[in-house]
Image (cartoon, rainbow, N blue to C red; front, side, top):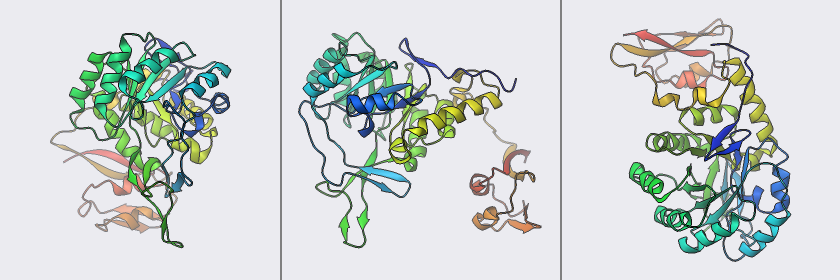
Length: 366
């Protein structure tokens, strides 16, 4: 594979071309024309508006907190649909805008009516979000009769029988499926006051950002096994590696919001730069060249196994691998790990804990 090639980050969904696969997902960062135009100044491929409902709503204080490495939010604020139409008239951006209607606050029929109107107010695509999949299916069915722009839905997490659900959505006329929404309920407590941190009625909210990434990645991989329409992977993305993994799982694009709240919109610029560097260094000209690789991977099968092996030049002698080996199969000798393969059970913790990626996955005959 040729290295240091010219990289094209563009992707396409339902004949809409995006300059890169990095979408700003719905949330506080896209809740008005001013915020959307600010976001458009960063390396964002597409922007999804904050979820729209008929009337306005103000979230409680406090409604969005950092917890561990994630974000817990109870932010359901909205300016209301009529105000949204006024905001959209102010917009002047050169990237696709995806308007989002919250079918958990608007009936599927009304959501379809909103979508019909929004397509004439600058929406390149419309999307529906809900924790009840039946509402999403109904909204797509109603909207398909009157909406000419592509229709996307955002699925809630951990849906069972995802294959039949996706089939029903495609039959209804969906053009793209995004997943997943935040995970919850989640809670944090102030140990000084003994009170919950969030100001919601029961003190709970929904978790997003880095902690939910492995869950979202598995969900996207599962969805991509069943669908023929493009998929947008959302949930916990904070680095270019997360983007690469989502695309390898089958995603066409990715959505980021929690990571951008906690790290600033500059995260899009950094991810875009790092993604270009990684693709060029690995000989990838386009995203398609490594999309859905896990669905094509070779199964090791009987007769082979993965064992840890050291790349000495990368090792900094930190001894983290020795600390995390519950079998005590690693001993530091001259500040380098030595593996006792008779004790090693090939669990993978040392490989994935090494901060320098100095422990490699070596394929070995049994």
